[in-house]
Length: 106
Image (tube, rainbow, N blue to C red):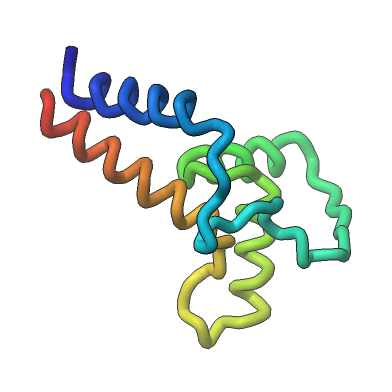
């Protein structure tokens, strides 16, 4: 069993053993983006949507998240980066760690 498989198994076992645990005071429970109350409908043709979906997949996020990031970057260009939700950053960081670990095992 590889180190990665062992780590994933340990995390799964820990989650199962502690599924009824009381969340700590640092735990955030909720849906990301809940404070965003307005919905914008944008029409794209099939090719445009495929391009958006492909870029989103490369970034490890959904098409809506990518579109929101692009829009927010245009509205706030002085920030110098696309503002992405905290959870996306967290997932990206964890994915990078896993990719590095997999690469190290090869």
